[in-house]
Length: 405
Image (cartoon, rainbow, N blue to C red; front, side, top):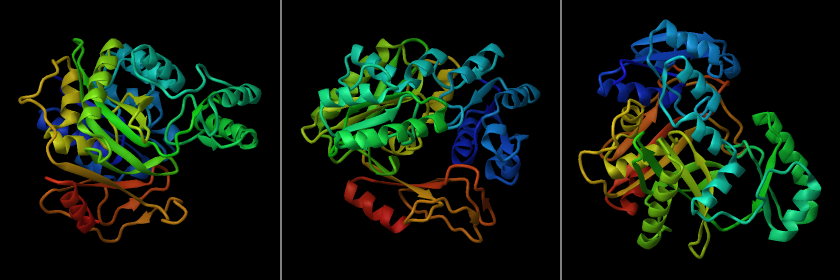
């Protein structure tokens, strides 16, 4: 087992790793930018080290500074959390080259799934259905129009290297495609340094369903029950729940079986999430795979009674995939993301939290790094807390969540 983990992240996910590592008897190192000097994760870790200015590119995305911090503190592993460098194959390779364990999938898997179109084709070969669309990335509007005419409108254009809703545009006609295609290219280039896009048929009434995957270094892979993530704004999730009120037992069993089989075929390791669109006839289509822990992982933990972060750490240390009891979904869990935003425009609204009392009580969990007197910085993602409600039934979980909110 590791002796010390450096957490290459901030906020609530950094706290989550600190607490999970502490339960395993592992010391932790928090890195922080100058604007995060008074952040909770920096206060609660065993050690802390400043890695640069507020700008993410100069701190949380600064690979040399992160590696230097790990070497200075003699950390033998790095946990990337989610966002920032969590899905950066080059960072995982550099960690391995420096003799520091990367708590996540192999660089090869990260690279394979990082290109969304390549991931779709790989999963198609592994037996998962995909939405009709381009079988390679496209950079030419004429080619996009030809593909759109072939598969039929409406279509959605997506950044091949993307995520978080950036570089994603819907076109219901050829005229709209002409208008939206260059906009999506510019967004993709600005956000990911890569203007390549792919195109697929748009399913307007589909549910966004995802399956949690966990695998060890010995070829053992487990897929867990689904999360419903259809409530979104700007293609970013706001409310998630499990089990999905839309997915029935038959569909659940088939998706779990098919995802576990596909993940095993590609040798998936660590935590990961396979995301799908499920249409009104309950036909499901693979969209993408995220090679990291998801923001919404707590709801899966609640219904299965497990700690996914602890499991992820153990797997990275070479332990066999195993739980002390047979895993079975029990009850219902809902997560609401709390964002420091203007509720009408969704524009980030940073500032000082004068006073804070978090909700609590039976079945309520809050994952947050916020505290009274903390200045929410303007430099990072606007999410400041996740409220999770757990109960035996969906109706009771909804009532608990309404009360907590």
